[in-house]
Image 1 (cartoon, rainbow, N blue to C red):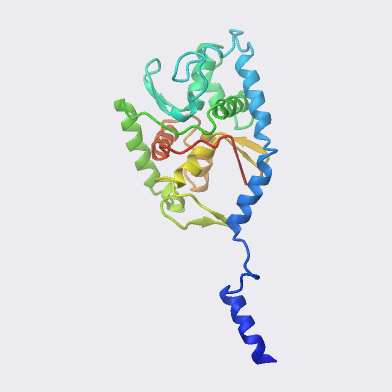
Image 2: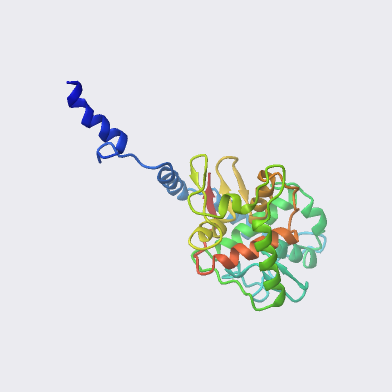
Length: 266
């Protein structure tokens, strides 16, 4: 009897039996996300963002409908997959969230410094995230195509690349520690390789995203600031040159990937 059980035991250890084969943790997480996608709470933030875009608000009692996100005043479709980019009116490279701050300042009269100092998920900062969610949704399925034609765009790409591989903090971590090679994982989740496609498309192309674990909507700025927290780095701050440069690096690396934002994350 004992000898008869040996082949069965070996099959279980080696995974030779298709009957006993199980899904990997990553497959289970992917299926979980797919089930949640139909009722993605990001839809609520998207609807709020569209309302905020059209509402007359702020000291100037104006809407954001004349905001230029890079393809002309009021144009929304396709802008998300072209950002960050250089804007002549500010003389610098901006991502979606920092550009929304500019429009909220110039069109509505809000103080961008005060908003940038507000905690994520609170006050006008929450409104910036909702606006970014709606704008991103209008480009869902479109392919990223960031410009590198302006000198500042190329500089920001190189700065972002250096920041991505720069080690520091109490743990001597870098972005590349988690996202610089294949086969990395944290807890049960595989970590995307963010230096090339398709990994960067999975990472960069998914934000803004709804975080199931804390019931919050996160934009790319919050995602990058939280990465710095996990590395035990000082916070770079909302719409900082550092986070925008990282966005340029990741965005250019995701060239040709289809945007899946707003996505849903663990």
